[in-house]
Amino acid sequence: MRMRRMILLLALVPALLLPSLACDSGEGTDGGLDSGPGRDAATDSGGNGDSGADRDADVGPDGSVDSGPDASADAGPPSDASFDASSDAGLDAGPPPPSLEDRIAALEDPGASAEDLDALIQEVTWAEGWPVTDGTRWLFATRWDDAPASVALVSDVNDWDAARAPATRAASTVHYWVVIDASTFDVPAAGAKYKWHGAPDVFRPSPEAQAYGFDAFGEFAYVAPPTGVAWRERFASFASAHLEDRRAFRALLPAGFAHADAARVLFLHDGQNVFHPDAVWGGWRVDEAVAAAGYEDVVVLTVDNAADRMDAYTHVVDDIGGGATGGRAEDYAGLVFDEALPFFRAHYGLRAGRDDLMIGGSSLGGLVSLYFALTRPAEMRCVIAMSPSLGWGAFAASATGADALVNRWTAHGTVAVYLDSGGGGTCSDGDGDGVQEDSADSDNYCTTTQFRDHLDGLGYTFGTDLAHWWESGAAHNEAAWAARMPDALSSCVAAGWAP
Image (cartoon, rainbow, N blue to C red):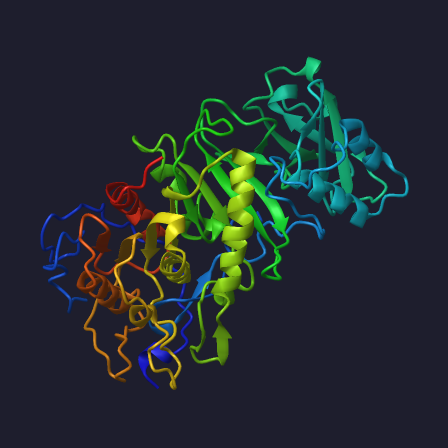
C-alpha cells in the first residue's frame, strides 16, 4: 500500500519554536513567499470545554490521521432552539421577547425540570445573551452539575466577595441563578469580569456567558463587553438543518466595535482553536495576529467543528484506509452560507461578503475553504488554505484522481488564493492518478506545491491573486499555522480584502 494511504496517528509532541517568517522577494532555498514561477528551490530537502485538547481525526499529509480539535467543545444543553436570520436578535419575529421577570419566574418555577431550564438557557443564548438585564438589574444563570454545596457569583462588580451574591438553586438541582441590582455595582458593567464560585475555593468560568475572555487565571466571563479591548462572544449548541451534530458559533470583536460598523471579516473553521490560548498547541492565536496595526476593523467569525468533521470538511467520499468516509462539504456549505453567516450579519450588522470576507482553515479546513472558493466564488475575496489536505479524492486505491481539487479546478477564478505548508521532500505521482504523493511527515507539501503550480498555469498572478509560503520542515499543527497567519493576512490584503 502506498504511503499516502496509510493511516498514522501523529504523535503530539511539545511545540517547537518556529523561526519568524520573512517574505522572500525571490527564490528562497529555505522556503519563503513565492513572487513568481522561480520558487521553492529546495524541493528535495528535507479548544475547559473550549480548549479542543481532545481532538478528532483529521487528514494530514498522505492521508495520515492528524487529530483535529475537540468535537464536543461548547456542546451545551440539548435544545431545539434556532433562529431566523432576518431578525437582529436571531429569533423569529412575533410577540415581544420575555422580560427579565419572565426569565426569573421560569428559574423560580418549582416544577421546572433540568430539561426545561436547559432549554431556557439555550433560548437566552440565542436571544439576548447571558447575563440578562433590564437596565436596572442583572440576571445570571448557569448549569453546574456536582457543584459544591454553596454557590455564588463573584465579580469585579462585587469585589469578588461571594457573600454579596449567593446563588439560588433551582428546582432542577443543577441550575443556579443570581440577580444583582446595578446600583450596588462597585464598577461599571462594561468590562467587568465574573465567575461562579463554589465554597470554599472553586472558581468556575460561566459557559453560558456570551462575552468572555482569558487572563492569567484562565477563562472568565464579562458582565458586559469591554470598550477598550477586543473580546470574544459565543453562541453554543447550534442545531443546523444541514448537519446533525450541534456546534458553537464564535466571534472575536475589535475594541470599540458597535453594531453595523464597517468591518473586514475573517471566517475560519475549527472555531475552538482559532483564538483560545488554552487550545491544542496554543491554537491559531488569531487574536494576536489581528491585534497588529492595520487590522483594527477586523471581525473574526468561526464555527466549531464537531464529531462529523471529516465528513463536513470534505467534498467527496474517499477511503484513507478505514473504509469510505467524507463527502458532506455541501451540507457544511449550507450551514456556513445559509445559517452561520446570515446569523452573524444580522446579529452584528456586518456585510460579510465579497470584498470584505476572507475564509480560511488548515488541513481539512484548508481543503473545504478552497472548495468554497471554487463553488461559491461570489461570496469572498480571498481564501486561506494552510497545509490543505489536497490529496482528498485520490486516496482510495480505485480513485482516478478526477475528484481531487487540483483536477477539478479548471479555470482562473475571482477569489485570491493563499497556500502554505511546512514539511518538504521529493514529490512524485507513483500511481499515475494526476495527484502528487506526500510522505507521512511532509505536511501536504507536495500536493500544495502541485496546486500552486496548477493555479499559476491557469493564469493566477503571484503577489496579486496567488501567494504561497513554504516553511521548510514545519510540522502539521496549530503552532505552525499560527506562525504563518500574519503572512496569510497580508497576502489577502494585497489581493483586495478590504471593508
